[in-house]
Every structure is written in structure tokens, then in C-alpha cells.
Amino acid sequence: MTATLRDRLAELFAWVDPGPGSSHLVSDVSAWWRDPQVLAGLGPALVTPFRTDRPTVVVAPAVTGLMLGPLAATALGVGFVPAHKPGDGRLPAGPLTWAQSPPDFRGRQVDLAVRDDRLGAHDRVLMVDDWVATGAQVRAVRDLCAARGAHWVGVAAVVVDLPEPVAAELGVRGLLTPADLP
Image (cartoon, rainbow, N blue to C red; front, side, top):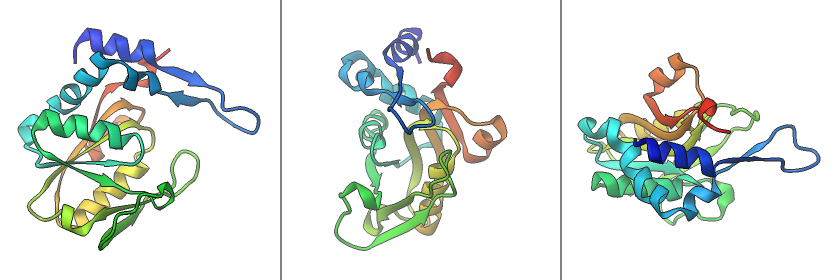
């Protein structure tokens, strides 16, 4: 990743207070999507550490992953498969394979699904997401890949906030850590 992209990602990032009743600040990465240089650079930067692993498909969870996933897939010249969440109103027709995450940083378990005909034993999967804090959704996507017989390559994330042993176990590599952000 170029120093310019790193600096721009940090510059465009913000923490926001969602208001009364919230116990924590929420990351706001929406300015990343407005900046054409960030959009042009994110896909190639995310996939660079994984090129030699020869992914054949990128899988990313809704919602932010639906933006990042196609950027990474395009940079690799491969296809994209969304991992759907039942609450997002976008479940596709046809048979689905489901997995549930362990509890995330808020204690929630997230259900994720992929279409059965979009992922199979011939695939080498790179997962992409904006932020990996606990690895909970990563574990669910990895379980989906295993259930479909696909080979797990790893995870490319913009921000990684995991202990090193967990990142190594899951194959997570990132562009930034929380220490890089304002």
C-alpha cells in the first residue's frame, strides 16, 4: 500500500457518537467511498499480500463488504460472492448454506449465508471486509467455505484490530490498525 493511500484512509476516517444509549463510538468510513483515489487504490492494496495464493473468488459479508469485495475481486480478475445476512432484506433465491458466528464484540451472533451454486470445492476463497475486530464473522465465512468444500486463503481487511495469534490463525492481513486512525 502506498503511503498516500494510508494517509488518505486515516484522514477520511472518523469516530462518531451514535447518541444516548450507546456504550461506544462507531467508526465512520463513509468518506472512503466518496474519494475516487481511495476507491481506485483499495482493491489492489487489499489483495497484494494474497496474489501468490491465487484466490479464485472473493467473499465478503454484507454490508460494507459488498462495496469492498468487488473492488478486490476486480483487482484479482476473479468473481465475487456476497455473504448475506437475513436481516438485510437481500436474501437471494435458491438453496443457501448458512453459518453462525461466535459472539462478536457486542455479544451478537451473526448468521451468514452464501448461495450454494456460487461457491464450491474448486474455489480458493479470499474474504474481504472493512474492519476485523474479533474475527467472529471471519470464522462464520470460513465455516461457510468449509461447508461448501472451498479452500480458505485468508482475509484482507482495511483495519485489523485482532491479537496477532488470532490474526495468524485466521489468515488476516490488513492495511491499518486502530493506532493508525485518529
